[in-house]
Image (tube, rainbow, N blue to C red):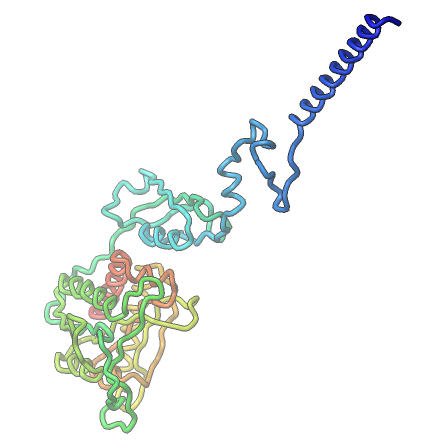
Length: 356
């Protein structure tokens, strides 16, 4: 074979080798272009852009929220005022949607409305942020406008800004003593002090009673005072009051405790003459407050150990408006609307007592 033939053979071999090499490179490039990196230990790719299909580039917001939603129980709102419904649902993180039926609320005035229908109903478990729909209706107001000129009621907003831990007898001539007056409890959520809340309620009650012609005497109209429990009773005695009403809020180490209770003096050496009429006043006022607020009833409580009762010579009651240590009732007690319902109930019960 001459030199020219050998040269042509080598040229053909080189050309075939080059074609084979180019084919191999092309196949490798195609394969690499379609490889997906392995997921890491958390189940996500090292570079999500490599593995996310175009139609799944973003997950629906509802899918993400449903995975992290908090389940809550819907409170029973039937019979509650609209303002109370707002507070109760706010505490659970559920949104309130109000639907007003014109046939039901045609005569509504202001915010005097109660919940007539609710969807979903109380005790249903939903997600925080879900919507509860209610229909509200007007309710007739309770009148306390009958004139009672000459009747005297003494209102004692319990406690004061600074307690006085020095002692006084629990009753006239007693060897047993108690602190003269304490500062009261504080809202577990709002941090509002009891002495401030009960003064606000008492001033509302004062205005309502005066509008009905009742003469009202206040044991205090400011928080910066120092008046013992016996001295407060003495103010009622000196005024020869038809009723001495003491306004307080409750507290407990158990934050689930809630409701309205009415304390009255039992019979002892000091209170026997006033125990009967005090019990009657407690019945009337308690029923009216529970009806006005829609709060739960803890009933009437007989007490023989309260200095404010034992030093009183006129009928007396003590209203525990609710628990500041309960998150829901704490918010309610700081609400002007709920305070107004408390004062309305007290005024209604007091007028009923004066009417007997």
